[in-house]
Length: 262
Length: 269
Image (tube, rainbow over all chains, first blue to last red; front, side, top):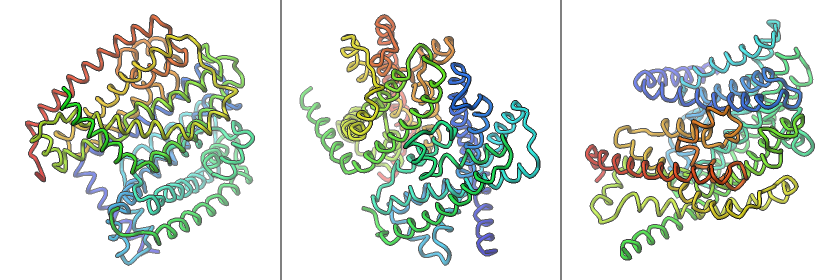
């Protein structure tokens, strides 16, 4: 365990050095993420210009939900995105051999190689959005609620990571995963919607089968309405199930890896 | 004229073949766009549950707008043309075009057309699933002029889409990595191109300003014509601005190409 932590620290050091070398890139990407977050917040603000409530959620409650969803996504971007994005490319080109030859857990090595400081910086902005919304709603969560919120965010991060690993693993089957990673963003869109908006088959599919809605709604509920065991249990169970599935799919895919370009 | 047409016909056919190779990717992407429609349906459905109309349009009209917008993106939108051009410059593959009597813009544009033919055809498959499910909501205006103006508006939109992607590709002459610029502009395009929400829901002054930007003409303009969000006089005026943007972007493309080539060091050549 400590060995892996040391490896991760070494990767983090390397990433920080790299960021300092390519400062322009860092600013550009930080701006890119900031813009995309702005686009999502603007969508909320435009809709609420024309209505007072979406599925019973007021403007600032919705802002808190979207901020939470963006926070999980920024962490994913910061900790794993670059490495997983390259994994798809490497599977196609055959450069994935490099990770197979390393004496360590393949998925760990392949998904922690690079940190993106821009994503991590923007996670502060997302936290700011959540804090601002909580302030406007006049919320005063206890320290325990905040702790539970943090744990829920961690679970959310693991679920998003698992979804992304599964999406990228498709590259093992269809070789060129170019653009496939974009489908992750499509699924992530659901996490910016309140659970109450889902009805009928959509509720079954996106709330119960895919965890995307729970990921953001469970932490947001804690801040809005305090600790709710049902939400927490649902999220923890979903986290375990999705992480296990992602590992299974990845290893199944690995068997098909042909080590060369198509 | 005709011999040169034959050249680009060949590149179009090759483009068709190479894009057909990636049909699975496009199909998966098309399939995932159904999820995007589901998000739209749920979010706007919830917003409409307390309102009969938003911005003067019913839920059905808004849903139709998003569906048409999606189809439009697959028919005229640039997908990864910017990266392909960038890759050709960076790897030195572009050198062969400098030495041959072939216009790189026309060559690339013919491949872009082939790619849109493939993606346009592939989006029809998920549409076969979506349309029966949504048929009670979908509603289009019936005026004939909307259907007549649609094709020219789409063609000019495609030219604007491609020209913007081409400009970003050309940036590779100056910057090694263009991905940051591309994704930054994607955020602006998806906002001001009307992919996030119908632009007419914006405050009036922002909407009026957006009409003078090229992004408005990328996807929003043809979509608004077909879905009844724009009137005849405004559509004709829009055509004028759209045409101006096409000419301006073509000029910028040419400028970046000639300036860029001066900096080009023909790596890998």
